[in-house]
Structures are given as structure tokens and as C-alpha cells.
Length: 499
Image: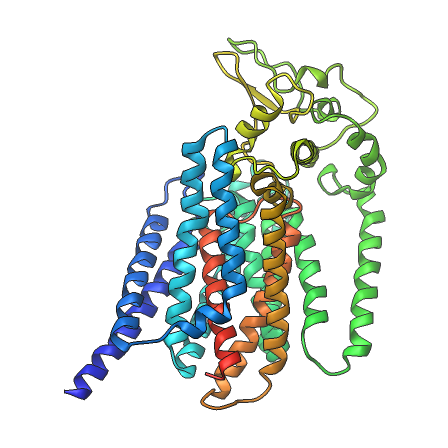
């Protein structure tokens, strides 16, 4: 009877792991924001099935989760505090029903999946953990490969009337990502940040494989051509040089830092010869003058700010953006981000402690609730509806760093900061503690654990940097990020308990 029971338990382990990996694979197709995507829904359902399967597994195996809970108490406390402030924010939200929906999708649901994968990963033995981590790495690394394939296959036919002699001419014109992905390029950048962090961590362990993966990821970044992704990649390279363990670090690290500064300065001056999209030199020269204006006035410098002749007499921009200032011309995408960031900042300064309604897509409604429809503190680019109501054209503020403070208040924002600091501190300790096998730990698990912990720390830094320029992640990325945190919590417990 015992062998039959053991075989059944082993089968349950395999099924649960397959459900988790299958759910993650389908999450990588993206949330259906730009086009329908039934696979994302299937992925969520698979993760719920994995949660139920994990509960059954823990009950049947009588797995004690006390140590997991105790060793994760700081992270759980901070996460519960963030969720609590999310509920408090409902009182100040312009749309409580929508805020509650986004709390379920971006906080409560990911929290459930995080707990589920933490329990499952904690229940595995060292060999099974290593296999799970390597399979996860393979799934993650598919994204940059598919990005390059998309660029090679479709750049010529999708980029419009562009004179070209090679695929190089389409860089920055055609922004590649897999055809199945259903979000915007900025949402897809989350997955390339993740794959690049894994590649850097693998490079720290296996040089040759790491070099190949890094080349693939850099090529994918160029194919996607999202500006903040270049900055995030540079920050992650510096983070890897600071965090990883390698020979001659005292010599190499200063060289990396000096080289990064030199490249940044070189690009700053060289960018003066590039298009408006990449002209950092020109933008920084007039940034202070632009920032001194109210958000509604910044449209003076946007060539897209024109009178919009429609049946309702709509304008693309707030009245404060007229008349135009011909002395400064600023590319629309980055200028509007500056306007939305300042509008968010002013909303925070209205009451730094107040959480202004959870949900990234509620930015437009919540900022109007605070300042009113005619305020100069609204972003300049707007939509005017048939009933005369005004909302900012973009529903998100494209600055996740500021928006976390805006939606959760100062205390909730500080809890998020403490959570990231705890992850980096614990990751650093686990990484340097896992130098050789101890107890029942296998060599492969120690290697995979070091790769995961270092990669997760680098990924966290890349995510923070990316959020200064956009709001990451969307729902698919949020669920995946929380699940990675769950695996980190299980690894933290196994490292502390030598399990």
C-alpha cells in the first residue's frame, strides 16, 4: 500500500508543478488590454487550480508551514499593511467599485498565488526545486528569443513606407514583441527586464551560457526599442556588478562604474544629433523651464497640441496650453510623462498621507476628483466627452514610483520601500551563504538558488528604475512578480532552516 501512496503523492507534486508552470507560461501572453487574449484567463484559472492542488498536497503530506510563516513574517506584515492601505484608499477613490476590482486583480489575487507557490516550493525537496527553477528560467528566456524572431519576420511588412537596405533601418521604427502578446510595448518591457536579470545571474554562475543569453536579451531590447528599457538594463548591469561574487571584484567594479558613467556622458552629448525621441541633450537643457510650468501649461511645447475640430468642439489640450511657445518643441510622449508626473506630485503634496484610491487606471478620475476639471494642475493632454466632462487622455500616469505613493499614501509607500529593502538584504545574505552544499541540499539546487536569488534582486532594482519612466507591471506581470516573491520566501526559509 505504501508504494501506491508514494506514487500518488509524487504524481500530485508533478501535476501541481505543471499547473504552476503552465499558468506562468500563459501569463506571459499578457493581459488583454489591446486585443482579446483568452490565454491569460486560462493562465489565471490554472493558477487557482494549482492553489487548490497545493492545499491538498500540504494536507495529505501534513507539511508544517509554521517555519515558512515565521521566517516570512516581515514580508507578510508589509504586504498585509499595503493591502490594508489599499482598502483605506477606497474611501477617497473616485470610483470605489473599480478600485475594489483592481485591488482583487493586483493585490488580493497575486497574494493568494504568492502564498500558494511559497507553500509548494517549500514542500519540494532540493532536487525538485532545482528542476522547477531551471524550467522556470527556460520559460522566461523564451520571451527575448520570440521578440527577435518577430522583428526578423515582420519588421519589413509592418513598419510602413520606410526606405531601407537592411533590418537595421527598422530599429526604433518597428517595435517588436511576440504576436500573441496582448499589451503595449511598455507592458511587455516587464518580461524583458525579468529575462535580462535572469541572464545576468546566470552569467555570474556560468560565463559562456550567460554571455549568449545576454547577447540575446540586448538584441531583444534593441528590437523592442522602448527607451526606459535601456536605462533599466544599464542599472541592472551596475547592480549585478555590485551584488555578484566574482574574482578581482575590487578592480572590476570601479571599472564598471566608471565605464557606465563615461557611456552615459558620451550618450548625453551624442544624443544631440539623434531624433527628438532620443535627444536627451536637448531635453535636459530646457527641463527646468518646462518643470516650472503647471501641468496644464506644458502643452505649449507639444506639437500635438492643436484645436481638435469635432462635433463637441473638443480640444486635445487644456486651454492653458495656448498660445503655443515656438521656442521649445518637445516630443509628445516624454513631455506628457513629465506633465503627468508633476500632476501626480501635486496630488501627493495636497495631502501626503492620504491614499487617493487604489488602481493605476484610476489616475485620470482621481486627479480630477482632487483638483476639479478646470484646474491648471491637470495634465495638459485631455479628452472632453459629449456631456462636457474632462478627463486626462491617459488613464495611467506613466510613473509607477510616484503613483505608488499617490494611491497608497506615505505609509503604504514606505511599506513598499521596506519590502524591497528587505528583499535585497535577505537576498544578499542568502546568496553569499549558499556557497557549498549543506545537509540535504544538492549541488544543483545551491547553484539554481544562487541564480534565482541574485536574479530576483537584480530584477527588483530593474523594476524600480523602470517605474520612474512608466507604471509597471500590468496584471500578468503583477501575478508573476508576486509568485517570484513567494518562491523567494520559500528559499529564505530553507536557507535559514538548512532544509
